[in-house]
Image (tube, rainbow, N blue to C red; front, side, top):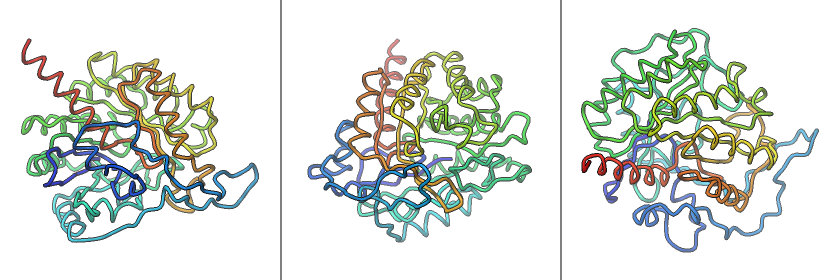
Length: 367
């Protein structure tokens, strides 16, 4: 999937999978998110520690059947506007699916509507709108036999990206266990089509391909810049949260294999919090990811998409997320984005990675 960010007033245009909106940070007392972004990434103080003390219930005890109320730091308005209709029309014309709609994202109005700063975003999934897996945290449609791949999707996607004039993109997809290669060649072809037309930096947030090394190599050799695969949760909770075909150790092997195939590639993963994990388990997961060479890590709050999905066990406080950011920095990750509203792709993170990739490219040209 990819996300389009239109911002005519900003020098930097970023193309990313999920976003962290400036309107969701209105509680910050100093500079706005847009100002921070213009200056460059400073991830230490993106999450405010100035929230008023919240005395509501934040964690379910064992056996508690109730649902937690949304704390103030996760509440946001959902504006609509001209951009919402324009983006929807463009995506339909290209026959591209959006995770915003399929996953019932509560931020769709903010993303597509543009918010107070006019930054319109949309998220697109490659390989259709139906997944062959049924993770208990995700509301994307599932089926054992999704529709065949659209052979025009790689070119349609690349053409759209080129026309929108962006600097950084993130592509992701549904799982396609019905395909012999899990869709690896389709994703790789999309990356190649993009690279033919533009110098945009490309991040791929990919499935585990059932651990198939050949599929991972196909993606790595597509000339992408960042290889991302989400571990999602701690090892103990994986069987209860992810589809039975997903496996904690398998995900680690996927990330390790990508790094072994190309030691220079940036690898990235993401962790959801609030599903009943312990601090010790979170830290161990971070260490496991670092041990397999993961370069970048994001940590965010799990949000229940519908009543049919897993309940939130705990709303983690912003200051706790800051602690995990510090832990990530101490462990030596290239960057750690950690906050309640942070998702697997994070605007400041992409800005940060873009600068790194540009410096690398500049050195290669000089050499």
